[in-house]
Amino acid sequence: MAMLECFLFPCLSDNYGVLIHDPDTGETASVDAPDSDAVIAAAEQTGWSLTHILCTHHHADHTQGIAALKKKYECTVIGPGGEADKIADLDVSVGEGDTIAIGNNTAAIYETPGHTLGHIAYWFKDSALLFAGDTLFAMGCGRVFEGSYEQMWSSLSKLAALPPETKVYCGHEYTLSNARFAASVDPGNTALAERLAEIEALREEGKPTIPTTIEKELATNPFLRAKEPSLQASLGMEDADPAAVFAEVRRRKDAA
Ligand code: ZN
Ligand code: FE
Image (cartoon, rainbow, N blue to C red; front, side, top):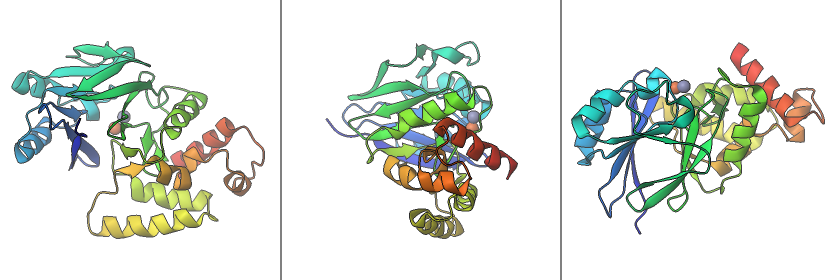
């Protein structure tokens, strides 16, 4: 069985699109559909033809291209059952513990409520790939719009428990702002300081900062480090409940 190939492309103001392609069968999925023209251009550039759309959550910047892509490719649209009423053109509703397949590659579905209540992530174990939507960002996380801080912390903890080598694709290029904020709340973290310099160099050249990995996020993402004594100390929250530490970091980022 061959591993999935990925093609990443920026679109809209700061979104990412990704095509994933199973070389054995030719099946190809667009992860979310931020912009149908950008997805079609990516498909033409790669020579891959869409068979699926994997939707993470109902926000327009992830779903607005679905209708046009479905019309063009007659592809199957898979998405969160918890948001089926908010996403037009969904063919297959999935939730926690379900699996889906792109060719020979199977993904496990994780429900990751917080940013939206029905948000899901796709983990392709054999290809070591996670599509995290707007739940986990490189050095950051999505805003908690619909769920509670506790829900978001538990969603992030689920993703943080995946194998460290897992490559993580997320919905937006927010890494530079995330990295600068991270350095402000976790100033003693040398891995973070090094990564901030790498991110600045990449963005200066206009290059994407993703995919990231679970390992890098565990070392540098303050939203995953709510249990770390050094981060707790820098917030004046020694021995606090990690969900409360997470909530404090999220509030500070929202106010930054
Ligand atoms: Zn969103
Ligand atoms: Fe988004």
